[in-house]
Amino acid sequence: MESKVRSAKVIDFDSMKKTPIPLSAQVNEAVDYYFSQLNGDEICGLHAMVINEVEKPLIESTLEYCGQNQTKASKILGLSRSTLRKKIALYDLS
Image (cartoon, rainbow, N blue to C red; front, side, top):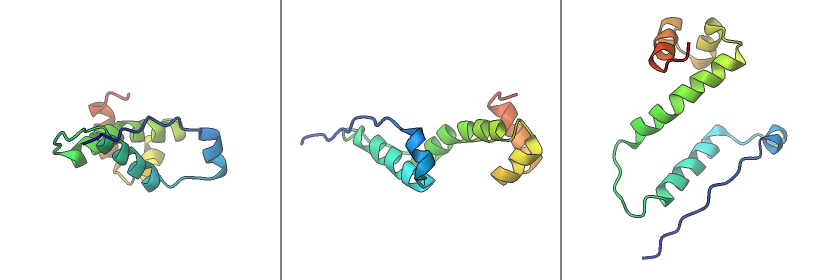
């Protein structure tokens, strides 16, 4: 059986500013690309893997957007400040 492996796409962030791409569409594309690379290998725990891969950069970007203001970041993320602080410590973002 022939494997279909797509090459990684280069993201043009300048064009995204003009026409926003929904985050869900970007996730679908990334997961489809991941599946295309499995070559029949089994996978389990995909949900936990995705959450682990996404959570740290999500928190980093949100903190940067908020000028490191944890109160604003916690509101944007929908987390309590104490939960955000725990995750900042967990990912060594301080």
